Length: 77
Image 1 (tube, rainbow, N blue to C red):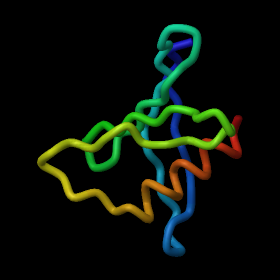
Image 2 (cartoon, rainbow, N blue to C red):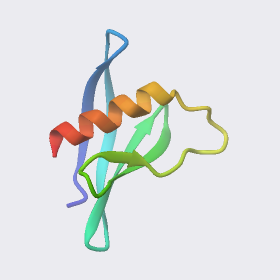
Image 3 (cartoon, one colour):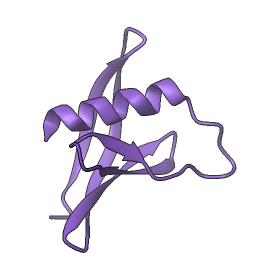
Image 4 (cartoon, rainbow, N blue to C red):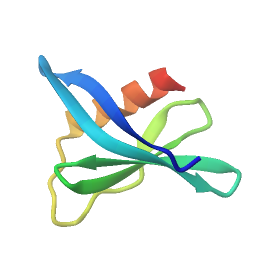
C-alpha cells in the first residue's frame, strides 16, 4: 500500500504536480505529499474529508494550496 504516485492539480490556474505516497497507519492510512520538498501529511477524517496533520516549523505553508490538495485527495477516494 505504500505506493508512490504523482498528485496532479490546478491551483491559481497553474497545473501542479506533487510527489505523494500512501502510508499505512494502524487500521487506516495517511498520505504524505511533498510540497517544495517539504512533507505534509494528510489523513481522512470521519466525514471522508482530508486534513493536514501539521506543517514543518520552518515553512509558512500556502493554506489555499493545502486546501486544494485536501480537496483533490477527497475526490480520489
